[in-house]
Image (cartoon, rainbow, N blue to C red; front, side):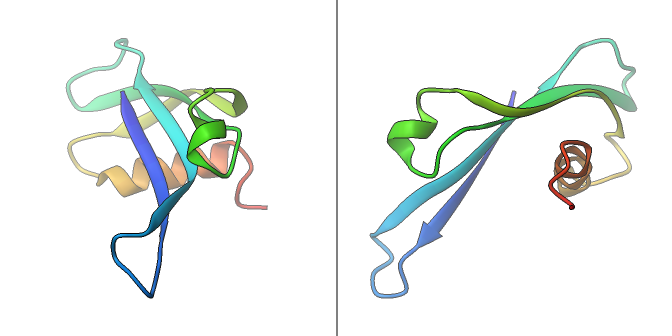
Length: 87
């Protein structure tokens, strides 16, 4: 599993941060060594307590990704677009 956590870091103190978003991406194990197929979801909430509940907001399935030739950020961008976060 790939876990993407978005944190808001205080400009006043590096010791103060707050997780404000989370996404999970899962390899569905049906791909090839060079082409992965991924499923995933975003988690409801804007704070750690709510995010830890794990309630799903949006999902995607069957997302193909050239895992050796593209960076992980390409996968994250494609996943966000697939779930409609580009609109």
